[in-house]
Structure formats: structure tokens, C-alpha cells
Image (cartoon, rainbow, N blue to C red; front, side, top):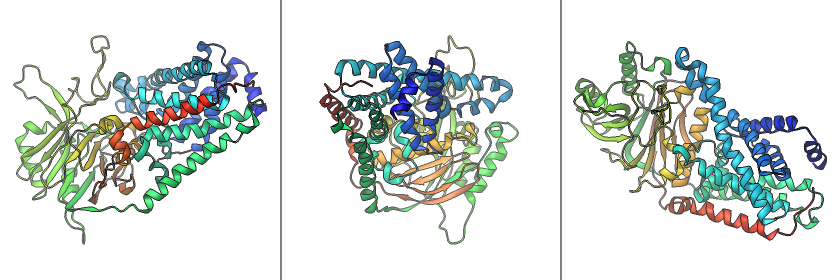
Length: 521
């Protein structure tokens, strides 16, 4: 490891830049669906070495930014798929969108490097303390990334464990950020082994990092060993996945056929399976202005089960008589007879997908159907629909924001995520999106039903376990029971990111203990 570090230090600037971009990209393969978690270790160890060796803050920023470009370009390559849905109009923008997003998000990685370098100098901590500081700063900036410019907390480091239920359980205590802090600490501590003048008594510390991961796994195993999922009586959900390609979804001559397919799927009966009490369709499943179409409402009222409801995503607007029409991306619950029982308007809109920020400056249109921007709905709220326990609706990527799910007000008994990931084809995006919503279940101790247009639809229990799912790009229905919420609120649900802050304070305390052991390379 010492020789590897020295060869890296003596390499040219271009070689170092190439190594940083490549390792940043390889680190992103730790996320779903690949889960090459082991690659986090060489990637972040190298990042630490070069940040630590940087002479100036400008040099440190360059190191972090280059790593970030590779990391975010590899992690978010699927953004380009959205521009290919209407390739004739937007296809040329795909590579620029991916690279532009990566270069923008890489500013956060550059910030990590600069802040870490500053703290290194101020604390004069030993090398192992400095590795922990980098982990703390990275996770802190992940939290910031969830807020800046409406936020984009996608692919947080903790989500690399979405393939292992026992590792995910720590999110009930520290959330996905807390799990990420433990993960990065374990990945970075081995970097100290290359510093030959570090006191021998501290060479055991990388083992502590692995021990932390083992403790996290042990906690998860114990938590799941007693995990029992109770079922809500008299509720049977049907999750409908129509698998409509995005480039066909809004074609005027095909819309009626799409509606007939949804109704046909909803009306299926299976031998030995009780009929559903509630039917759920995905985001914008209804390609019409449902609220002002009485004929369509009556048709959907006939599809809604007696004593239950049909819950669907649909665009909504303020009506033809409005002075200034407003449009919303909405969820509506339709009762038998065509009466609307509840409405939720999406509050966290996707920039450039559902509205164009700084529209007075940026003149191009949004990617989604129609030229007008969607309006922001009211504050988050819990819905009550006939025959169902109170639930929190989350439309599309609203479910990736842990802070919003944690501030729902009246405590819901389950979460409902309707989405349309058809924009991103057979890419990593649907798998990463599914991973994010599973963490919301664990953090809050609530079951979650996910209904997607082309997949992946799933029923998730309050421990984040997938009870049933429909695969990507498949048509079908899932008839599932609704699990009950946990009887007691999780620690994360009660205290939120305050626990993460406490974990960070402990880490900084560890780094402070090592002051005075700043060593030569």
C-alpha cells in the first residue's frame, strides 16, 4: 500500500486526474443494481491520499471535483435516457445534460475536499483522525445536497447496502446518512496503513472500521430475527403496472387504449384470491384532466371496488374559467359512483421535468407533456381514504427526501409512492429509486406500496423488506395485503438527523483524540 501511494504521489497531474475520474466512476458501481461495495475502499482511500497531499485549497478542490465528475457521471448516466424519449427534439442534449449534471454535482465533492483540508490543518489530527474527518464532511455535504436548489439526495452512500436487509436496518436508528457515515469510515480507515510513521499502536484502527460494519450487520440480524409483519384486516390492495412506454404514453390516438388496458388489468379475477378492496394506478396513469371529465370519472367509479376506492395519478388543472390556469401533478382517490374522495398535489417538483427554474432567463420548455409549468401543491399532509388507514402520498421522487417524509405532521400508518420511471428505460434509475423508498420504510417504521408505470412496483414492509414485486418492463398486477406499521416509532422517526449529528460529534471527538500524531507520509 505504501508503494502504491508513493507511485500515485509521483505521477503526473494528468495521470492523477485520470485515476480520480476512473475511481470516482467505479465507486458509483457500489449503488444499485450492481452493488460492487468493495470498490468504495480503493476509491475513497485514493481520494483521501490526494486530498491529504494537496498543498493548496485550490489543489484539494481539483482533487475532489475530478473524483466527483467520475462519480456522478457514472451514478447518473441514466438522466440521458429522459432526453431520448423525444429524441428528435431533445436527443442532442443527452450527453450535455449528463456531463453538465455531473460537473455541477461534482462541486459538492470539491467542497468536501476543501472543507476536509481546512479541518485537517486546524485540528492537526493524526492520519486516522483525518480519514474520519473526510467521512464526516462527505456525509455532511450529502445532507446539504438534499437541500440546495430544492435538493437532490439521490445515491447517498448508505444506499449501497440496499441488497442486504440486515445492513439496511441501521437506518431505523441513524437513517441512510448514519449508515453512510459508518460505511465511509470503514472504507477510509485503511488509508492510514500507507503512512509509515503513524504510531504502531494505532495500526489496529482499520480493523475497527470493519468491526463497525459487523456491528451494523449484527444489529440488523437481531432486529429482523424478531420481525413479525401483521396485516391490516379487510384491506386488499391491487397494484397495477400497465407498462406503457413513455414515448407512447401521451399520444392522443393511444390514450383511450391506455385507459382500457388499465381498467382491464384492474378488473382481473384470480381463482382463490379475494377481490381487491382498493386499486392503485401509477403516476399520471390517467392521461386526461380527470377532475373536469365527468364521463371518465363515472367510468373509473365503475372500476373502483364497492366499499373501497381507485387511487390514481393524474394531471389536474384549475379549470377553463380560471383567470390564470394552474396545473398540478396529482393523486386522486375515486369512489364507486365517480365521487372524488381525496386529492393530493405534488409539492416537490422535478426541475426541468415539471417546471423550468429561472424561466425568465432559460427559454426552453420542460421535458414533460405540455409547455406550462406545474404548480407546487400544499404542505405535506396525510390522506384519509374510505376503507384505508391514513397514509402519506409520495409522488415520484418525493420519496427520496427523508427530511420530508419525517415531517408529515399527523402520523400516517403507511406510505404510498406512485411513480413513472419509464423515462429512464432499462437503466439503474428504477433500482436506485426503489432502494431509496425502502429506506423511507425502515426510517419511519412504516410499510410502503410502490406503484410504477413500467416498474418496479412492490409492497414493502416496515422493515424495508420486499414482500412482492413486479419486475421492470413487465405488465401485470400485484394483489397484496397491507402490513401494519410498527407499534413503536423508530429512533430515527423520533429524532431524525439529530442522531446523525450526534454520530458526527463522536467521530470528530475521535479525530481530536489523535491530535499531535500528524505524521509524515
